[in-house]
Image 1: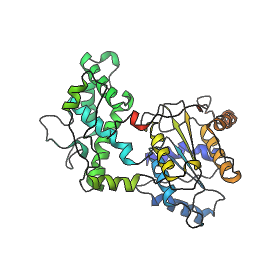
Image 2: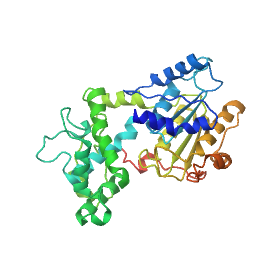
Image 3: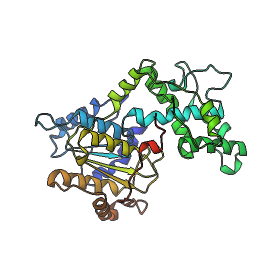
Image 4: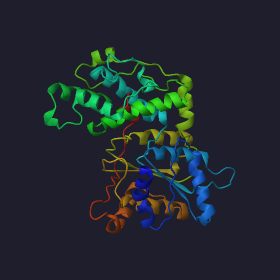
Length: 359
């Protein structure tokens, strides 16, 4: 319920900009709930003139997949007119989550406390054994003991600082989200593998070369290695990887310094759209921001307006035109002077392989 309330507060910007807003949540992941939400809206309020499908974070992944599933077929229009993806976990679950296996094996090589030597050992790709009683607070204490995360930098021992530097340098995760990523690599992996994939492993690191430690040779010789199950890989890809086969105008905005869904995921998504022959219906933009769950408030109404003009008038935006448009919304959407437009039209993300080792 807390998440629902946060969404109501966060996306009040949509209503403030003059649009109707309907948001979906779920107890278990899936895409059908998003379309059923639209049907509920139509039942109570009638058909809207236009419907934009917007997803942020993991919901960006949901929206990118829904754009495939509910695309127009045989000239019959689908339920959505355009798509907006902000800080999306894009490109499919395989490429978006593989680095968290890297995090687990590198963290275990460095810290050896998740699991501890005296605890039952298990393959790290399963997250946790099904009967584990480990809590998030207990994991946080283990991370603090090993790396000093949770302590002021001045209070960390030299050994803790060195271990933290190794983990964050090799896996390329920022310190402030290290624990969050470990949580996902623990409980999300547990749910994904054991509840959805029948105990099969979708992630592998055979042949991956890790770099960035004080002794990469020892690191690569010592980390645990796992081979992915091809059936599990295929099932995860089928469920989560968009095909890119959509004719819907699609806008994305991604924080360049997003600490959770790395900006390089946009390169993976562009490759999918190029492979599908629909890259001409995709405009990607980037902002000089470092938060994941919400971006600068004036950027959202600028994106909505640009997407509608693309749909209604054929005016395809550019990163530069989005920056200009955003400036006009700043006076009314600056959140008391705290928010402003931070578009960087010249920015292009590096390939995902520059951040996550190829495999």
